[in-house]
Image (cartoon, rainbow, N blue to C red; front, side):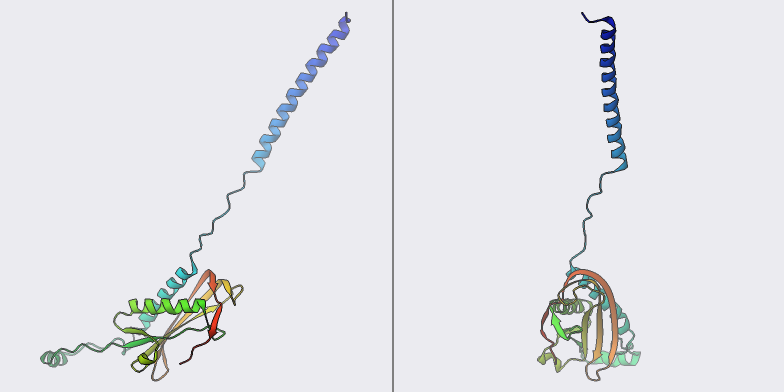
Length: 213
């Protein structure tokens, strides 16, 4: 039989080991809690919501055409003065003949390299369609040999990378669209507008030599 002193010592040792284990578990739990508070969960990765560059170019062309229309409205060629009462009376006695519409031809666009690219071809397509919708009072046609004989004004657009990366192929960054309306006979620019925009994936891959007329 063990001495009483040794038994008491064993009881104290056992008691001390239990308290130490509890303290270690409590301290470990506190450390986990503090670590969770000090290091919050990382936020979810941001999702890029960049619209397709085709849509961005479409909006830029619409904005540039709106500005061009405002300038054209100040020109006599596109905003003839109202007829006087005498002219109205004389025209009323004659058979009504619809006035001929101004013919505007949309030219091919080229960039700094004087070569057409996939993006410039897209610009041509958007410009021809949007100009036909916005310039409903005019006749908007593509530049072709049959149309040149009756063309009065030429609408041209250029797409220029400003600070774009990889500016020779697939680009992202800032771009500018310039539109100009030129008198076909005098070669005088009568209206022009410019719009800047940012886009990704703009395809500036050359398609071949620039087209001249």
